[in-house]
Length: 288
Figure 1 (cartoon, rainbow, N blue to C red):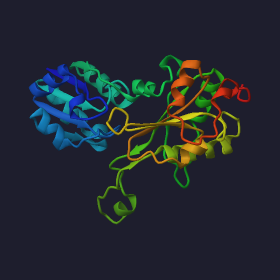
Figure 2: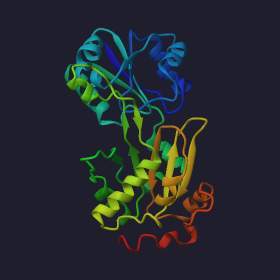
Figure 3: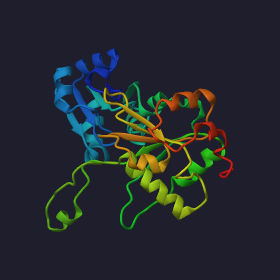
Figure 4: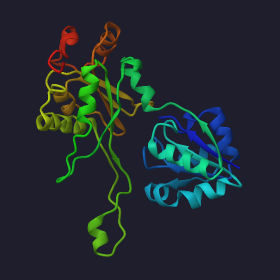
């Protein structure tokens, strides 16, 4: 019949749209994608609110079993695939849409709020953003800087950069697997602090002056759309030390700042910040 890809928004069980809720209540099968993001409430809260059982679609299922468990049933039944935020903001969901269409399955999208829009809550104007980048966790022997050229490109054009920070959910424990045991590592969610530290390291490594850890204004975002939402502005060095609380976190590296943007950012500036807002318009001279 139909595969419904339903955005849940950013906060809790009540953020679903009326249309999305009606679809979920009438669905034969409901899956919650828990690989690319997580909601501020657990599955039990959602099941109580929707009045329906929900199956968690973890990484293994999304990557290896989605055709048998999600797409094949959608040929004859109504299947709701729930996505934190909006269903078109991750490549994983685009791939699911494409596979469904290739199998002749009708797909309907029910959109909702996502970090791509909520980032504007800090006062930065969305049409002044350039490429969005992902910041992966650095490992001992893997410290990629593929995000660096895009940040530099954005700042050379005066554009802001939204940085999506890595999450690790149900990652295999390879040491346990070598002992013949199936075990998963605890979930990890990158903080603004870790992202700031890695960005500082990337600048030191690449050394093309895409940004300055002591001068460039950045914005840390935490738990956007939730009652405990936190927004703070400061330099990378300052954000590295600030306590943003629990996940999920994101970050913005500012480009050119207009007067209205500056006025709003003043409200979020970390107390005692060394960043001088009145000099913001000359921040990009070096990178240009």
